[in-house]
Image (cartoon, one colour):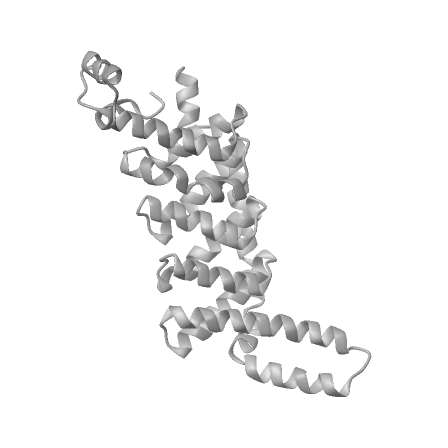
Length: 271
């Protein structure tokens, strides 16, 4: 029983996580090597687009290739224009954010437009503009580790942070917990993103820590319970503890507790 509770709370051997974390952190160093070349691109989108469109009119054999490059740039440019509509920052700051999106895509091998769309999604979910680069770095690393796309990783991390009233600076710590859940359980980043909100509100309001919530998910899914069903079961359990039946009220009296909140605080959800 002690071993099960410990596992439910994710107090497990973290050697594999530490190695993964070191590997992921190493990826970010690649961004610095491309800063000079990408800096000019980030600030001169219109110039680049105009010159490349001019080339298209005069070339034949490489027209399709150039169209592809121009199309990719225009898609990235459009995505960053959308970011500017909700960021509420100066032109200088927008240039910095464009550059950051390009560096992130280069360092982690992500599509530049996908990275830009992640910026928009994160800002829409409440991430502060001043913390957007740090947060998206966490998103990029988690998406690589969890083998999911940036949109899914952004959705999951922002939901987790908002559910527990955490800051964007906590994204690395939260992503480690989520990755541990994937590693220890039988679930994926996409499944967690689709189902996390089913129980996170009830869990955070009911004094159930994120570690214990995710640890329980890992344990249930490992035993074959689908991810969505596992979250639903946990929510139902928490609600039952806070809205006890007559039988449960009698049990509370025998245990000498006033209700579900006190019981969870004393023993944890697993207890």
